[in-house]
Image 1 (cartoon, one colour):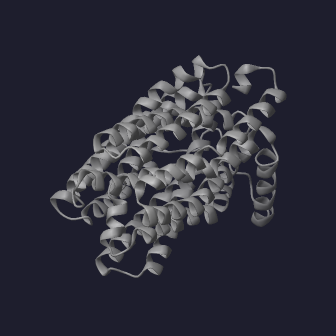
Image 2 (cartoon, one colour):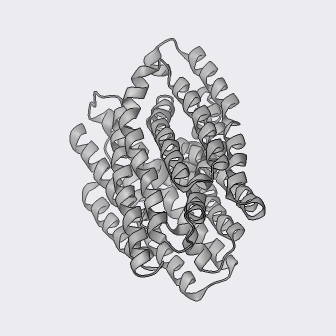
Image 3 (tube, helix red, strand yellow):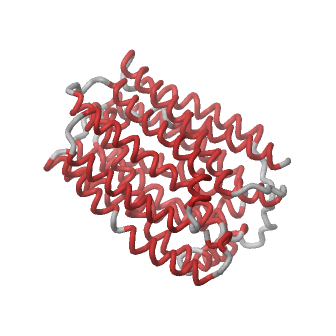
Length: 413
C-alpha cells in the first residue's frame, strides 16, 4: 500500500465513522433530557461515558499494540453498534439513571477501541510507506474529512429528529456503524506494524504498559502536554454539549431540534476551517507549543464571551470561532506527541493521553452541569473559561522541556 492509498483509506474511515457517530451529537443532550433526566443527570451520564473511556483506554490501547490496530477498530465499531441500540431502548423505557450510567460506560468502551488505534495505524503506515509530507498535513486531511462528515451527520440528525422524533437518529446511527464495520473489514490492514509472537500475553501487556509510561508520563516533553489534557478536553466536551440546550434557550424554543443540529454543524464547519488552516498555522509559528499556547488563550477568551453574551446569533458566531481555535490545535498537538513516541508503544501512549483527557471530563462535565443547574448556562461558560486557563502552566513546561531535548526545530516543533 502506497502512502496516498493509505491516506485515502484513513480519510474514508474517518468519514464513515464520524458520519455515523455524529448523527446524535447535535441532539444528545436534548435526547437525555427528553428521557426524563435533569440537566445535572444528563451531564453525569456524559461523565459516565468519559469514565468508561478512562477505565478502558489503556487496556484497549494494549490490544491495539499486541493484537493489531485493525482488530481494535473492528471491535470499536461492533461495541458502538450495540451500545447505541441500548441507548435507544433506554429512551423508549424512560429508564432510571443507573441504566443510563451503565450504557454510557459501554459507549465509552467503544470509542476507546478507536482512539489510540486509528492514529497509531496512520502514523505507522505513513512511516513504513515513505511518506514525505508533514504529519500536520496528514492529520489535517483527516480533520477536514471529519468536520465535513460531522457537519452532514449533525444536520441530518437534527432534521430527522425534527421531522420524526429524537429516537430515529439513534437508529440511523446504528445502521451506519454497521456500514463502518464492513468498510473497515474490507479496506483497513495493518501496515508498518506486526504483532509479536505471544509467549505470555499478561507479561507482554505489563511490558507494553511499562514502556508506555517511559515514553508517556515519564517522558517530560510528552508528560506536560498529557497533564494539560484533562482541563482542555473536559471544558471542550461540556462546551459542545451544553451549547445545544443553551442555544435553544436563547432562541426561545425548547423543541427546535433542527436548530440544535445546525449549531453542532456550525462547530463541524469550524473544524473544517481549522483543519485546513492547521498546516499554515504550523508554518507560521516556529514551535508547535507556541501554537498551543496562543490557541489556549484564545479559547479561554471566547468561552468568557459566550458566558457574557446573551444573544443567540452572537453566541452562534462565538461557537464557530471556538470551534476553529480548537480544530487548528488538534493536528499540531497530534504531530507534537507522535514525534516523541516510538511505534511499538504508540497506541498505548496515545490511549494513555486520551485516558487523562477523559478523566478531566469525568470531573469537569458534571461540575459545570451542576453550575448550569444552579446558575444557568451563561455562568457555567464563565467557569469553563477559568478552567481552560489552567492548561497554560503545563504548556509552558512542555515548551521548556521540548526545547531542552533538541535544537532541531523540525523535531521540537
